[in-house]
Length: 204
Image (cartoon, rainbow, N blue to C red):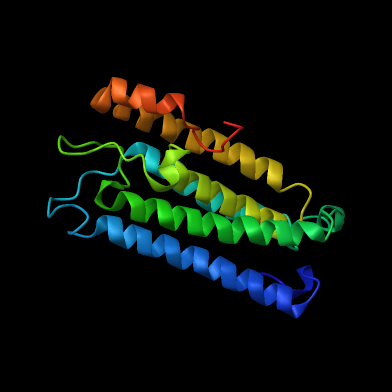
């Protein structure tokens, strides 16, 4: 994936491609899992929530921006303005760490994890695992991975638009989800919010 000349060595190119492939595979498995009859309690699939398209747009948009700003389609000046090489390793840590966090978060919720914004009468508020500190750790993982791609490719112009895209799209999705959880769990969810962070501990 991408141009090997954009990386310092063949090893860095290989490990980036391996991590990127793992990201794509993990997302595909999550979609298959949440679409399965087991995850849906054998119920008929519901119509996709409109905010799901925001998540899809943010995910693909972040990837396109990161790769696009290192492609031959932009000016040589834009291509040549790079972050220091150390950011490749920071990006790899974000990319792999984000994948792991998202997978653990989905596995913690199991059947409670859905692509649509919805709650059920028999649903319980999950506060274990990564949910002890973060209310939306699966989204945190996705944002870290997208930012990791931008940092690995090292364009000075990529991280900010990727973060803005994620802030807008995931922000709107989270706002709708938390309204639904507040309606379902009431004071229990409001109390939970008091000792957790929305996405990143100590930041937001």
